[in-house]
Image 1 (cartoon, helix red, strand yellow):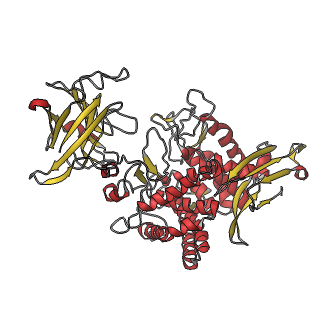
Image 2 (tube, one colour; image 1 turned 135 degrees about the horizontal axis):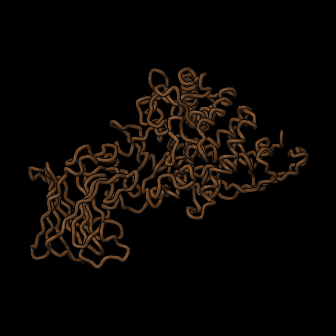
Image 3 (cartoon, one colour; image 1 turned 90 degrees about the horizontal axis):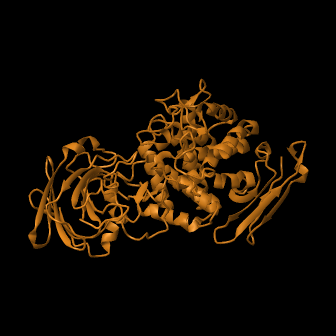
Length: 601
């Protein structure tokens, strides 16, 4: 591969034999002779040198491993604002690099690949040191131009030529202006559109800012990335790169399509959006696409046992035939039934009801553990349970009152210092990661267990109290870590949960935004079985509210198309209990919006 580059400041960089997912693989940084910024690390980036690394970067970032860099002093002086032609030849033992400056003054460097061998990671990059793709990008605080890229094979056959002077380059190299209002998480670190994380974000948006265009754009965006044929037919991207063009999606398969329960989370988001808005116009446009995805997941992953198999399941810690992803699929189907009926597609609604019932039966047959008093994490790990095994079976309506009650009581086995571990397989220690994402699903399921299954408030409230009075406050009451946003993970001492690498601006950690609005303020959309429609209700979970010691709440929720509903309640106590006869509720909203106000039972 050859290209021309001009350093504007600091240096320039490029990759070969890298993976499509973040370019994991060999990374070369050419550092100019200066001057450098005062903040530059001259030990990491010595002037007038070539730095050769492998991995995501030339520095090791906790869970994003990178090999120790190799350093090469150069016999020529590399200056800013001068064009250089660089050629990189991939060889069996390393990478032969030629740097050609003005007047044909050259520098040759051979980088041995053997030190990189132990860092090869097929989950992120190429399975070998000699295969993969290429890309360009200077290191932090460096600026450079690139042009005239040429790639040839060992027989000198041209594989790629691009002057890099047309607008199409932006989409090809994932640096175009966002064509849609997409959401990312971990904005400083992640430049990926994670559709699974968005399942929390969508409901937070609908409850807080009312920017429904973000949710709509995400739905449009995902279906632009859906494969219509081939081995990935029906699938959408689970982590499309921000700024990339969907016309290049083949280049990102399978690396950006390999977190299989994230496909299901996307279906849940579609169902959530309909529940929040009743927007059949948008979802009607994508209904065939939605059914295509459901059909693909059904054929790919439902095994002979009726459980989801042969996938990469984030919600089950990678194990197979697991409760959480199977129950998650049932949640999605239950919601899509209402979309199908609203679109007058009764045949699809009927088939989704049947499929959900089959998933329900499979989970109760294979994964309910009387000895645990909870749903097992998975068939292979039948002696373990997890937060999501309990939370998702409650939301899906798979757990009855007894199973939900004992499963919630079993959560005590997962408590560690300030919050709840993902599963009983997670060990206790200073670096145990506690997930606001997972505990957000738990928080909602506890309210659902009480309001839908009549699990006693005395069973669920102690856990709710721990979550909202101990766990989440760690993100807002510690000045040394406070960012004004929710986090990706916490450690048991309340500090950021992957060290300095943890995203402290991660929407997947903000579930209380909508859960407390739904069940403490009590303003939410509920499905009415009689009218077969979603309606606004104001119905706080009074028994839980009482045990939490709350005597008032107020807030407002935005509406699709503008306007909002503002609601509040207040109460006085008599002998330590809320007085049912003295609860006052007020609701104001946009014209024509009806809210059913329910009083204490």
